[in-house]
Image: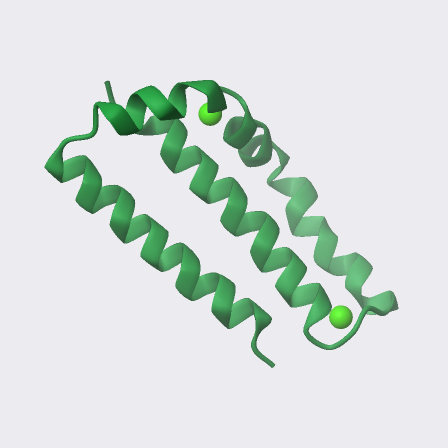
Length: 88
Ligand SMILES: [Ca+2]
Ligand SMILES: [Ca+2]
């Protein structure tokens, strides 16, 4: 088993969190509507993130060392990008 669903979930979480951070960091205003557009254009990523989510526990149970490194690296990048999005 691979870690496809786990990775897709991280991509979706990052996308949503970065968008929220970007919108909220300077207060919510009219200019924030434009910031929702990238989210719409990446709608398929959001669908992928939710689709197959029930397989994630099996993926994690079956994870090997390489996959762990891959997922860990992705999670680290995700957290970095989210923090950056929330910072002014
Ligand atoms: Ca804003
Ligand atoms: Ca998926």
